[in-house]
Every structure is written in C-alpha cells, then in structure tokens.
Length: 340
Ligand SMILES: NC(=O)c1ccc[n+]([C@@H]2O[C@H](COP(=O)([O-])OP(=O)(O)OC[C@H]3O[C@@H](n4cnc5c(N)ncnc54)[C@H](O)[C@@H]3O)[C@@H](O)[C@H]2O)c1
Image (cartoon, rainbow, N blue to C red; front, side, top):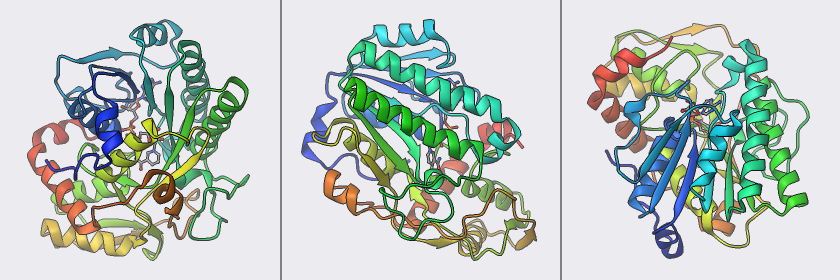
C-alpha cells in the first residue's frame, strides 16, 4: 500500500538508523503508519505505548524490533517502562480523539490530552531525550476567526470544543518544558490527515466515514452547506513532516504547520468519493454540528518549507485512491472494527 516516497531528506533518511524511538498512540491512524516508516528507516528498537481505546492491534506492523506496551499514558509505571528503553526520540501522538468525542466526554479529554501530555513530557524530560515531537492540531488551535492562510503566529482564545482546548493546552505544556527545562520539543500542527490506517467510526474523520457509507450504497451526509473547505493532507506527507520534525537541527521550540496548503470543498470530496466507489445514492443534507464553526481551512506551509524543506507530494485524487485501496484490502477487519 503506497504511502508516498519515504524521506527524501538525506539527513533524515539516516538519522533514525540504529536508534530507539518511542511512539505514543502508535497503533492509531497516523501512529501505525509512522511506526512502519520508522522501521523502514532502520530504527534499532521501536516502543509503542497505546491503550487501544481507539485503535486495532492489526493496524500495527509486525516486527521483532517493535515492543508494544498496552496501557495509558496516564500510568506512571507504564511510562517508566517505556522510557526504560532509553528512547532518543519521542513522538507523542496518543490523544483522546476528537471534537465530538470531547464534547460528549470532556473530562476524559482533559485527562488524556492534558494530564497525559504533562506526564509524558515530564517523563521525557527526566529521561533526557534528544527530541519530542508533539502532534498538535492545526484544525484546532487557530479557532474559527483566524485569517487564511492559517499561520503559526496566530493565537486564538476562542476555541470551539474541549479537544481544541486540550490540543492547545498540550502545546502550552510543551512550551513550558522547552522554555523552563530546555526539553527539545517541536509542535507539529497537523491538518485534516487522511489515508490508509483510519478505521471509520462515530468519532472519526469525514474521509473514512464517507468511504464506508459510499461502499454500503448510502447517501453521504453533508453537515452544513458543503461549501465548507478543509486542508486535507495525505498521511504519507504528514509522516515525512513528522520524521523531519524529529531530527532536523535548529527547530526545537517551534510550532510548524504540516498540511497540503490546498483547500478542498466538502461537496467536492463527497462527489469524488461517490464517483470512486460507484455510489449512486448521492448526498443528503443534515444539520451542522453546533461546534463546527470553521467554514474554511487552509494552512500556510511556508514555515515548514523553510525549516524542514517540507513539500507535500500526494495530490488529493491520488491520496483518495490509496485510501480506498486500503479499505478494499482490509474489508473484513474494517467491517468488524467500525464503531458508529
Ligand atoms: N487525524 C487528524 O486529522 C489529526 C489532525 C490533527 C492532529 N492530529 C493529532 O495526531 C495524533 C494522532 O491522531 P490519529 O488521527 O492517528 O488518531 P488516533 O485516534 O487514530 O490515534 C490516537 C491513538 O492514541 C491511543 N490512545 C488514546 N488514549 C490513549 C491513552 N490514554 N494512552 C495511550 N494511548 C491512547 C488510541 O488508541 C489511538 O491509537 C493525535 O494526537 C491527534 O490529536 C490528528
């Protein structure tokens, strides 16, 4: 299943070779793909810490270099076990995902994304790691009032869901650990990630859910006018950005957008999914979710270009085809695992 070219950056391509890496949330949609990329990059040992609350074990690659620790980042003993492997690099992806889930379960959201991130950062500081990459959310931290394209220096105090608040809180803790303790943390602000690895479900993103419904011949629900836009970013491009955030020098303390830099209308997405899957059931308009106040989203990616040499490579039509191919190859598992 093609995820796009692996790191084309010479320094990044060799930097993980023979090293130990910890990925929290490594069984998830982005995390499982990141684990594959790190194994391909030649890590000596990969420790994955995931409680499987929103992930399927079959999504994780099988490799003798991978140690899987099942449990929560809130558990200090488990964190100690994870850091006993002495990881040089930590990718912190574990999170209570996402907006609707957090509106329904705000305390769990705060526990995992707030306290969990604080504990993870404290453990990373104590272990003296070389770099922590915090998976922040560009769809969250800018709020709905920010001018387009969304730039890293914009700050909003008007966020719409507990998830958006706690993703920003994670960034604030990351800043504290960087500024006060000198922990080298990079805050990667991801935008509307899609691709192989995301099992559809009640709390999941629009693309896997559209594909799932389209494959069942159901009309695709448009929550709003459909004119809303998102900056959909293929997971292969996100991986390239994350790998660069993990090792390139001179970027500790920075927040960096990782996105496609392209706006796509939700209506166009729905039509493309219906065309790709041969779904003739069309669309149905349904009520906008009250928290969903972002009418347009498009990230500025010049900072990522400048600091990381980042360049998204996968156009939307190609990314959708890869995603659909993954659905077709995992039809049975996805049917069993989809949570609505
Ligand atoms: N997917 C996106 O569009 C997107 C956009 C912006 C930011 N992000 C961020 O990227 C990261 C990964 O997102 P994803 O799309 O892969 O989500 P995901 O839900 O697939 O992955 C999160 C993983 O964390 C695990 N997890 C949840 N609570 C945990 C806990 N208490 N302890 C240990 N593991 C726990 C889940 O089982 C899951 O495997 C998250 O931090 C998310 O906020 C994602």
